[in-house]
View 1 (cartoon, rainbow, N blue to C red):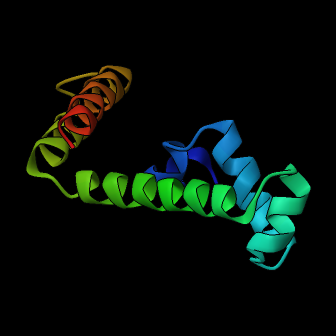
View 2: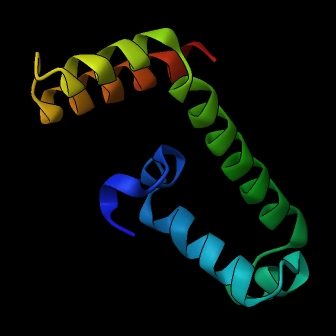
Length: 100
């Protein structure tokens, strides 16, 4: 799978989030085991997972917004550069995140 084919919600995750997901998978989704790996309590791991879920959900909902679709279309039509489109979309997502 090439980078362009990765879902936007994956690209929005930072290295710590991806490592958490990897550990979650490797430990069969057991929050107890994840807590032991990180040396924290179960509730701490639960909060981390809940925040990760919110991050994914927020990014999914943003991806379907009309403004983001418009910017992507401008890029597809070569009216703006792909890197500029990414910057605009990232800034928009940051601003939307501040509202929530």
